[in-house]
Image (cartoon, rainbow, N blue to C red; front, side, top):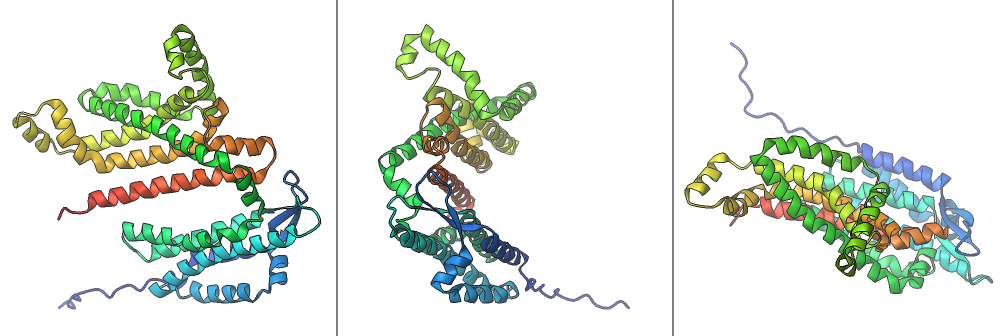
Length: 396
């Protein structure tokens, strides 16, 4: 007789070694040793002399860094414990704030010299270490295997130490650039959001309409998708250039359009180009969502006397919404990043701050425009993740 089968298999213990944390630690040691942590320059236009993290730690005392390295060696080999992952996330968040505090303290010391124009800029080492600390924290949060909503809330909470430490960096070059451009910073953010909303709103209306039409006319799919794919391959600056001449001609032929703000430069070519870029992910996800609606559900709605429009709004779109949100999330994040380039055609937004920094060789001003764009994209991505989670929750 064969041996009886066991009633249950033994639970597999997750591996104790954490390769992600180990790789981040090795890369962080290399960045701390080889890349400049900050750069001290006599003014904002010069690159300045590099100052490495080892030099900063020697002035401050390296006992904190030594404890961090020792703790990392333990955490790397104890990754199977949830307490270890929670502590990794917390320690990495504190380490991120600590990097800012170290840079801010060094900037305060450098600014006390004879030259009042001295600037302390964040170097490649700082940005690399900050990125590695954040990646290690996100990996730890992922290993905790939380639900989507608690995970997003925990990720937001990890930024609290850095936010509390921000005032300590007032002497850093990026903080001084913000102080010099404070009056244009908030309007630039609002203009950036305006560009994104003006592009996404009509893209959703057009994309859903096209997807719905494709479910009734399969030949339209064979014609439209190649066109949308080709649009995605056109560089953004080239697409802006292609739209400038036709829009300028329209404004010249119809002065009423010019009075509405439609011209070869400004908001019109920017919004139109971003709308075209956003169509592909929206149309594709809307089509997949509509095709997944059970035919029996649509037939029952028609049997109840609903018109095709009512079936779309009350039956098909609610059932297709979770899939549609995936494409909308992609389109919003993509549009948020591409909106920076619209500054080249006079649309404004955060891209104008970024390009001002590029044209004046002020790297910190470039970062002042780039960081809010990244944060807006991350916030949009998190919002749609949370919205998707809420839609998947069963009704009470």
